[in-house]
Amino acid sequence: KAGVTQTPRYLIKTRGQQVTLSCSPISGHRSVSWYQQTPGQGLQFLFEYFSETQRNKGNFPGRFSGRQFSNSRSEMNVSTLELGDSALYLCASSHSGGRTEAFFGQGTRLTVV
Amino acid sequence: GQQVMQIPQYQHVQEGEDFTTYCNSSTTLSNIQWYKQRPGGHPVFLIQLVKSGEVKKQKRLTFQFGEAKKNSSLHITATQTTDVGTYFCAGATGGFKTIFGAGTRLFVKA
Image (cartoon, rainbow over all chains, first blue to last red; front, side):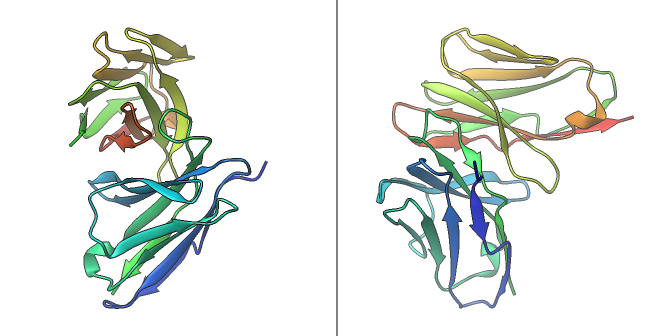
């Protein structure tokens, strides 16, 4: 069974640009969650999608958005990038979110210069 | 909003010593999960606890869920160098949102 695939693995962007990250969950998983990981801040919850609907949202500005497609693949978009957006972005897939085991992808390392 | 606090932030131990990390929630949890992230890697699921007072063991690892379902602990007996990494607890309430603690980074000196 293939794991969670995140693309790209690394990105370098300039302040003010926008970026789109992709996550392909494990086959059969309908929940995809996104997290931002920075040193000392742990895993900060961005949002969770289930069956193409955003079910939960963290405390991030509106510049961070996402969506989920009918095949459960998910994308995350960050507009007007700031230096502070530099982080490892992880997505996690699970059967139903919350109460079920989450499988993480390798992450996308975003550097904003 | 819901918060999950985890202590300590860092722990340095000599190989063979025991290690414990604690997790406390501001609200009652429906379940708690534990993950391990090796340096340069991604979080990997270790275990899920659901019942009040539940205790589960995985070889040298012992996981506990508090009676009030607001706290949890992970204890490693006789640490090994392979135990290095960051251990995260993650709590869920009645909904489907999972909140992660900040993690405890374990360093093991051989």
